[in-house]
Length: 417
Ligand code: JFZ
Image 1 (cartoon, protein in one colour):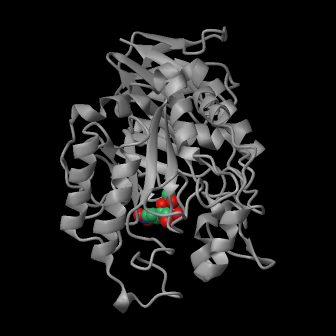
Image 2 (image 1 turned 180 degrees about the vertical axis):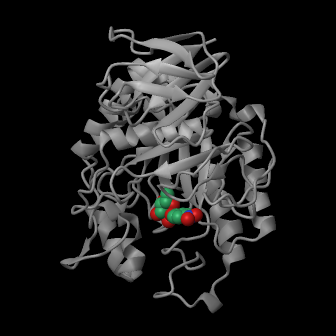
């Protein structure tokens, strides 16, 4: 188990290579779906008529909503449009190979039938159904891996959880009790009652002590040895490094396994007034950029209070899936390519094949590839019949292609020795 910390794009400490075979599926997968969904999806960024800045799932803290007031959201939570099969089929269509659902975020509301609290969707809402249980069943039916986000320190509802300074006095809280008698039982139940869990995505380790992180890690592995642990358990423990939200490192990070969690707009949980949706081209370029540097892209959806997925998310994810249907060979199961640090290009590789991803198409159609050796070039999109030639000019490989990019987002050229 490597020791890792928050992974900072500005090249902080570089942990040792993590060759653990438990991550093999994850290294192949490259692209996952994050789901942030809870009672915070009801106010959706607005509280008492006021727009609350920041990410939607933080509204309780940003507006310092007292627990008795915030708890009134639970009896309103009846997401009748929730369709686990639709979500899993969307992930598959998008090319996302694993799903990570918020089982309990910082507000403490559980999206599954917890035995540790009635503050959950089964016992504490008119919906009365186990969102996690239905998602787990749909993932099993569709062959998609399921992971779970779990906030192991911040809990603004529990009297001994961290972070609620407006209802509680931190000096009177017992965080050790929270970890031992609430977090551990909940980790046990989510890893015991919902089948194989591929990742437990702990988050914001804040005040957790080393032995507490280690005990949680040991508990996870005692229950599901193959369950991966992301880089936010705390105290540098975990199976892979977790980048800051939406952060992509400036260059190759070959020695470690790492993942960028990211949003399609500017919030994880649904916000009524957040319409700042990234373009499909930007999202595809982010995926390529991350994979070319050795990482995974965990891209989020935030269902609304009724359980519906925002249309702009669906539209973009389906377009990403269409691009991956044609170009997935250059993403899944690849390693970082030999050309790194070129603004307009990214490369990945599989064996002796190099995949050149062209972000900025040159108007001349001429692409110089210094330091690269190949004997043939072909469009990865086999339906493309545009002319493509390879030559060597002054010792460097040159590709001559048309003036127009064949793909509107990212064009991929397969180079073989
Ligand atoms: C955390 C959560 O607080 C947030 O609500 C969301 O779930 C996100 C995926 O994770 O936010 C973070 C955590 C860590 C960093 C930034 C935002 N960081 O390391 O910079």
